[in-house]
Length: 294
Image 1 (spheres, rainbow, N blue to C red):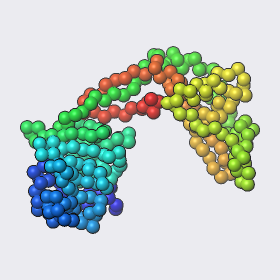
Image 2 (image 1 turned 90 degrees about the horizontal axis):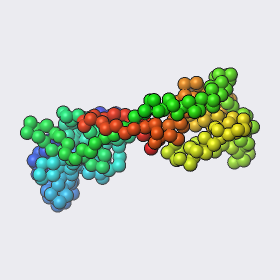
Image 3 (image 1 turned 120 degrees about the vertical axis):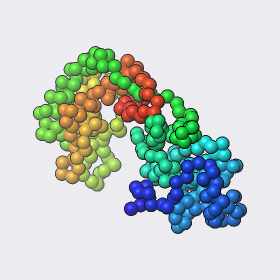
Image 4 (image 1 turned 180 degrees about the vertical axis):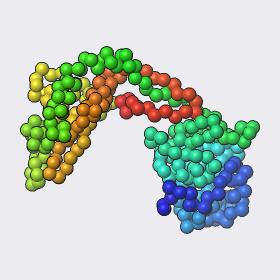
């Protein structure tokens, strides 16, 4: 099994600067400069280009693919950095060097300490308390977006007519599907595929964070023209539904997915009214289900 999924590097745990210093002094350097100035291999020497340790202005850095992921400072602090790589490899490297857990939550590296879980973010500094436990020293408060239910229900009622129309159109379709022929009739053919099977000329999906794009779709949803509202429905099916290939080219959507799609669109349009920021207790990581709208 490759690195990143099991502890197979041979890297010994390093608890603090003194242990890192001892390892530097007692290990033959990879290249000149002496044990205190050159790099030394971390774990198996055949992986020296990937995992190694070196000194930098008094600090001792444990490096994973050229990124100083774990840094031991002379004052006893331990610094964790991802270098922008919130990957399984980086998480496993941290676990290999320090006797702590590290995992990925919502594309962020999170370490587990006795006092809780903390994101590494742009850099997390740790120190040992009087009991020898690692504690963070530069943690910032975390917030998540919470839906104000009463307000959201009031706002969703404004779109009841279109949602009922959308639901009805899905229920009368076989497997809730709109095939390519239907999209071609509504949007025309894509001329880039003249030599192949005809494909519809569809606009790109809207970015839910882009107010202009969201308003553009709602202009279609609220249009007096049945044809325009019908096109809006097809575009929502394309963005939030399931794509089908081969003989059944097209998009399908379930009634449950229609609810999810309309919640996302309505909340994206009214996010200032619908959401409130709630602080998360220190040492707790909560999934922010609506962060993609901001």
